[in-house]
Image 1 (cartoon, rainbow, N blue to C red):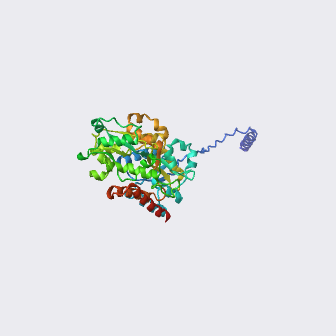
Image 2: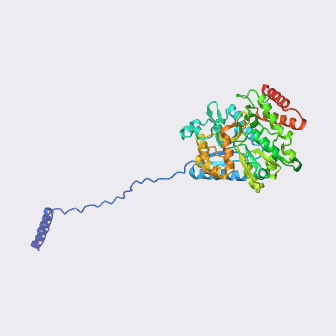
Length: 434
């Protein structure tokens, strides 16, 4: 028994000893699992801040408003970061604008009539556009010279003309054919017009050859054609009592005196455009605005349009134009300029031309095929070549008022044209001296 125990101990000891001498087991590699999160750049598209630009003008008619709104829609598609808020002004536009400018609350962009431009330019409330024009490669030469120059003050451009009109001689084709007269041409003279007016007039039937309203927006072209002016170059004096202006007034009012012409009131109308449509006037001087009016109100009237006849000293016309200007208080003039540049670029101006409501201010469009198919509009466009802006300085409204009153005194009180214009000139000088 003792031996058995001893043996067991020896075996156990031996086993222990052998165990101690055995090679170490190969360690099992430890697998370390680690979750690695790869860095990712998440692009969050931040909505670009949209700039709001306010634009105001007068609403001439629904068709013209629709035209502007369609152009603004195209702008919004091309420039989604700029919102143009169109705020047309109804009623007395200039009274409203004057109030807003005085309060510093005028829109960023607004219509500027050439007749009002000088007043606003001298007040320093407009932004000069030359820097923006140069940046976008827009040149003064891109526009009809008489238009862009009309909105240039002290060498800087303050407005981009959006469209324009001049006066054309509208004539009734039917009356000319019935009288056996050849239709007027662009080469007509005062003598041609006078002879035709006498041949066409039938006072006993209420038909007169030429419309000669007491209108300061019509009479001045006769002064220009006779070599005269309404005001001197810096608008510090009037030239209404000059020999050239007096002779022009004698010729103009002479139509009514010999019954070869009449005023709208003579035939019961408020505007000679209506008289022309009715057929009580065979010829009138009107702008392109008469074309859509006749189309809508007197579609059966057969008419043509030529440039005004030349006077003793050549051709003369008036240009009526409106520009887009930027307010000095505009917080985003660059955005405002983008709007103006879009509305007056060649594509937009082509749209204006094809609408038939106004003529484009871009000089390059003078050769547009539209004019070949619309010779009446072509005559109005051509008139800009020798036109004078309808602007008489800071007191233009007073000048117009005195000019109209002078013609009315001739018509209604029998005053001589010379005395009437001298009286008008004296009144204007009193106003200028105040």
